[in-house]
Length: 328
Image: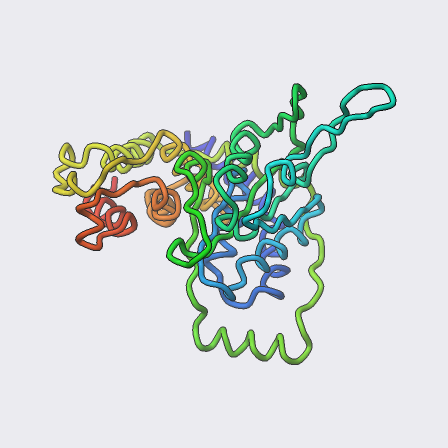
């Protein structure tokens, strides 16, 4: 077993050689926001979609565009608005009167990296059009089904639900996002750097660092990262504690309406592996699980009215669970 872990460590060291260069390229444009950049890389390495939430002006859109610019893949930004239609996203069939046939016109979803900007500005019908794309990596237009090219990732931004003119995402769609990131304001020091950079020389052009072949090898290495049985059981304990908290001695059953789905278990393991990969390790630890736990679980817990009345949100419940579950 030690030999296998050593071999994986060597693979990780070899296949992650692009990470410092990629981080440096992104940080030339995105000053501060290290948490956001780190989690976007975890999403890319895990082949998982990412939902980014924060008030306007926190470089959510710029971060995704910068990441796309550092990858030699196709990129589409789709601005979600209240009048957007599903056909504007996935495409439609066009009738040809000359030979009485229909031809499919593909929409902007047929790209490698999709920036769904302000996704909660569009109504549920449009948001639901993403469901098949995100889960099955395919699109159906009329009676034709098209497989999306590798890689296919949706990076969506949204403003907080409390703002006017937004639509809450359906639970089925939210669950398809591997991570939900909450972006906060930069520090005073970082904001001074941002001000100086933007108001003097402007933002530099991003250089392409990796292509789809390098990404595919990195993703394969991430999947092969070793996870001990104790760490697997730790992940299961955390997820099952969101469903049956009383079984784990947590008096919070009245606060949770629905716990994490099986996707929570899968994504916790995948994200923990990617977290380890970025740190040059061929094995995942409980600390990797704890580091990304809130990002994987915060949007999968549905709290009760009682929790809302007590002003307890899903994030606070996740923290209680991680504080209580014993680390192996």
